[in-house]
Amino acid sequence: MRTAYSVETVREAERELMARLPDGALMQRAAAGLAAACADLLGRVYGRRVVLLVGSGDNGGDALYAGARLARRGAGVTAVLLAPERAHGGGLAALRRAGGRTVAPGDAEELVSRADLLLDGIVGIGGKGGLRPDAARLAEVADRSRAAVVAVDLPSGVDADTGEVRGAAVRADLTVTFGTHKPGLLIDPAREYAGSVRLVDIGLSLPPQAELEALQHADVRRLLPVPTGESDKYRRGVVGIAAGSARYPGAAVLAVYGALRGGAGAVRYVGPAGDAVIARFPETLVSDRGPKHAGRVQAWVVGPGAGDDASAVGEVLASDVPVLIDADGLRLADRDAVRARTAPTLMTPHAGEAAALLGVPREEVEGARLASARELAGRYGATVLLKGSTTLVADAGGGAVRVNPTGTAWLATAGSGDVLSGLAGSLLASGLSALDAGSVGAYLHGLAGRFAADGAPVGAHDVAEAVPAAWREVRDA
Image 1 (cartoon, rainbow, N blue to C red):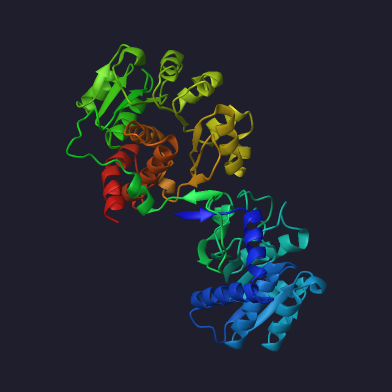
Image 2: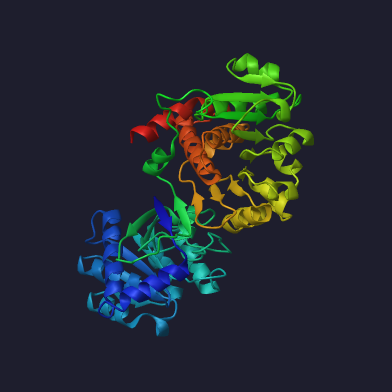
C-alpha cells in the first residue's frame, strides 16, 4: 500500500531522525537521492546544462547540494537565487567548490531557455498560499522551457497537505520526494503538476496512521470476495438495484451490468426498467413491487437514473442493510435519514453532485477535493466516494482517506458511474465494508477502464465487460 503523510507528521519524523544523526546528514541523504534521480533522467551528466531554481528553505539546500554532486560529474550548473542573503550557506558553498555559479532571477530566462534540466527548489512542503511574484515568474519561465523539470520533494506552488493549487505553480516532469509521499502528490489538481514521482528513502520512522492510502494490486487481492466449495448464490451475497426510470432505462441496465461483474451471487432489480434489464440480463431477479417487497438482499444500490422517484430512495434508506446512493438518489436522499441509519452507507457523488450537497460552487470541490470528501462524509455520517480525476474514499469516522491510483480520462463517459455503482454495491453485498467496497470498486473500475479504452474512446458497457479481466489481473499479480 502506498501511503502519504501530512507535513506536520513528516516534520516531526525529520526532527526525531536529525536528533540521532550528525549535523547535515539528513540533507545529504536527500541530496544524494535527488542527484541520482537527475542523473538517471539526463542519461549522460558530463557537459549537460543544469539550472537550479533556489529559494530560501531546506528545499533550496537540497537543490544546491544535488547541484554540487552533478557539477562534480561534469555538468555545468548554475543556481538562480531568489533570496541570495537567505540561501542555504552549506549548500551554496558546496556548489561553488564544485565549480557551480550563481545568478540573480533577472538573468534566469536565457539560462533556462538553454538548460537541459531544471531543478525546482523554490518552495518546500511548508509553502502555503501560492507563489510570490518573483517565484511565480520563475515558474512561468520554467513552464516555457524545453528542459526536463525535476521538483524537489514537491512542485513549488502546490499545497502539500491538500493538493490545492492557488495561482502559478511549477509543472514538473519528475518529482523526487523524500521519506514518504505527501498528499498533494496523489490528489488533483496538484497531482497533475508532479509528473512521475520517485520516492527516496531517507530513514524516517512514520506512524501507522497515514493521511492518505492508495491500494495496490496486493491490497485489493486480499479484499476480493472468493467463493468456496460451500458457497451458494445467497451466501455469496444478493445485491438489490433500485434504479432507472422511463426516461433513463439505460442507467438501470448498466448498474445491473456492474453488479453482475462484482462478485455477488445474485442481483435483484426493482424499478420501471425491468423489461430492458431482463432482455439484456435474463439472470437478473426482477420485481415491480418496490424495494420493501423485493425479497432478501445483503445490500442496496439506489439512485442511478431514478429521476424524481423519492419513494424508492426512502424505502432503501429505511432498510437495515448496507446502501450505496448514487446520482439522482443523492439529491433525493434526506440527510437526517442517512445520518440515522445504523447499517453502512456509501455515497458516490461526482464533483457537481458533491457541490450541490455541500452548497458550494463546483470549482470549490474540484480545487479542494480532499477537504470536500471529508466534509461531506462528516455531514452525512456516511462513507463518501468522490468521483473524478482523483477518486477519493473518505470514511465518516475519519482515518486515512483512500485515493484510487487506477483509471483513465476515457472513463469520463455517460453511464460509467452507473457501472461503478453496481460494481461497488455488489462488493458491499459480498460483505466488504463501505470503505473497502468503495476502494476496491473504484480500483477495479479504473483498471477495467484502462483495459477497455487502451488509448481510445470507450463506452460504459465496454468498461463493465472488462471488469473480469481487471479482476484476473489483480488476482494473478
